[in-house]
Image 1 (cartoon, rainbow, N blue to C red):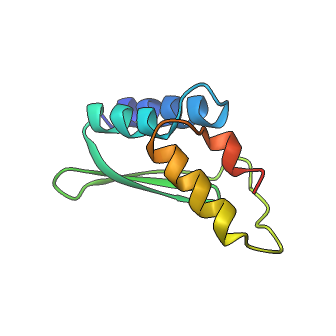
Image 2: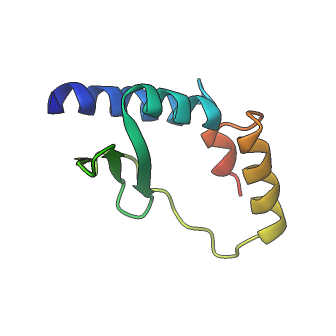
Length: 97
């Protein structure tokens, strides 16, 4: 069961990283796989997905570490988050901030 969950998580985040699916599709696929929440630590590359009933599936740090910007652009961040919620932005769009 755990291996199946890890495969499901990896397929979702691989598709997101590659720009094949947008934020709303990430959420739909995780919910379909019986997850209710997730956290991605972009500094370490770790993904934690939380199932209903508080069990957690964590994936290691084989993801590419993303450099955090020297300056934080609040307005650009707000715009990309709003667009992501409407299904108009993919994960790769966040990387240009």
